[in-house]
Image 1: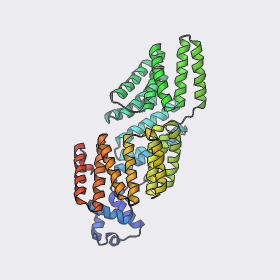
Image 2: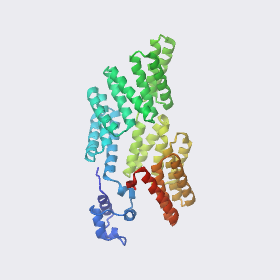
Image 3: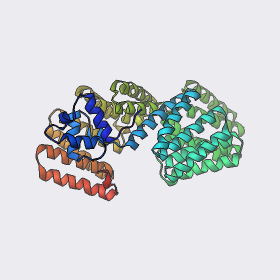
Image 4: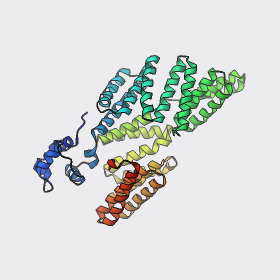
Length: 434
């Protein structure tokens, strides 16, 4: 996969369309100026970028995308493929894709991707049974996660380290890791119910080892309720089994049999679909970025099926992605159908997703030349984003609204919202992102 500079993208698109420098320049600019941009010796203005994007039939966002961002996307792609092979226990294929990701992560100094690569290497070694080697990789990855203050990743990695210590019968180390995971999760208000359930389950396991029965049962019930909410049959079944063992230890045979039977039934029904919904959704995103819309749809359909059954809290995100695909294809009818499905599952929507839904409505109304409703949805989106303290999204929306008014010839309103966008970005300390 190639990573292209701004000039290289323009040159490639120009040649693909059979344009000469003079053709591309038109009446807007000189061929020499185009040549300077293509060679990287001159940076185009925003107006020129918009002209080039329109002429070359691409987006400004595509042209402006940095080499680091392109590398990030390529890394994510290879990591997703690697994770798929890890699930299928295809270690060689997984390692091949990890190495491909590692090349870009090292070349472009992508610290988070380096951490993820070590994390995946740890997963492979753990699955192979090489626990000491796995531990080394997880410790390296967690060092980077800690440096970058990525709390959710830290929690997940501490759980992995705890599992390794548990399997090595280093129980005091295991309980330390599990408690660190719980503390980081709580102190930093991490929002991930599945991860929370895993913390409870692991703490239940380790307290059982230390014969701390009351704590073991308490954490087991907490895990049971959390996994039941998430409909994760595999972990729910294992939690029920642990609960059955605790009742047997307390010589309560009736409850031990009841929970062991329920655990057996649940585990028998379970499928190991952990992470597959996320992986399919991410693959859909990547193929969208690579302009392969049909392949993108194929992965989103799989993600929709998995998330509808196993993780409804993430279903909306997949539906929004599918709607974006239809918008790209200018298929208004099917886009509206997906929005209806989103409305049917509105109880699972996040604040960020709600903003995206308003933007999708804006885009559809705009395509239908219904500027009244298009404008209304943009303004609602902005007000909603501000009310939920989504200030980066509010800044982006302010620019979108400003450009909307510019297109309508209303310079006064355009300036009002463009200035608002600048102030919001300035308050976030990311003015350079404009």
